[in-house]
Length: 143
Image 1: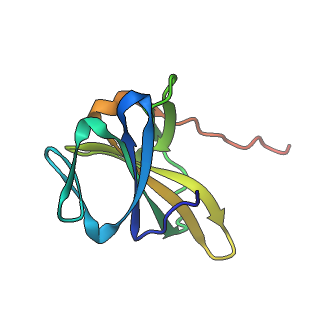
Image 2: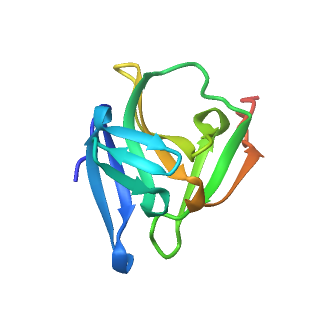
């Protein structure tokens, strides 16, 4: 399954019997609300079924590759062990409904772009997260 473009949300849902399903939803048909997510005009899915929803993003490469802090999170992705995410602190948002992570996927130096996936995880699926100082690698002196 190929990832959707930036105008589509990929919604991961928990189904009965421990199964999961994935829906691709055009951004104009998607809305997050207090009680869950709305897909189109008639379908409402409560938060307890939402594992996550994602969207692909392309941004220009900036000079801010160095960061002094990072976020490490452990989230319930429906698997037995969960998923661990590590992002720069400026690529994390603790929203009111979801924890949002911008995860780097590819870097296209020739085009001057970085391709990211924005992952929205409902708070009920965040097992823990922490803010840490990012390790800074200082090159050794050649002499």
